[in-house]
Length: 115
Image (tube, rainbow, N blue to C red; front, side, top):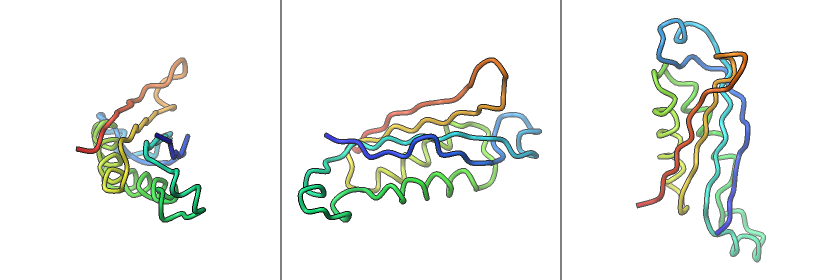
């Protein structure tokens, strides 16, 4: 099993539980790790045999640029669902909100497997 990933994609968006979070842009840092088999792709040097990480990046922006959500968990689920539509085994999505506090970074990390 191999991993294709997009790490630390920085997006400005308006999400959060509190009303004021829906009114101002905040930094979000998103990392997505996808487990899949890439052996055919590497042997044949064929991008169509793997998941192009451009798709992962596109899904991150599609989800984060939509109407505000209260929970980053909801955002992570939406990204995971889009990735799982591909020929993959599982996905891990991590979303951080680095601007919330000065002494630590809150966020969520979910793991989903294809059913």
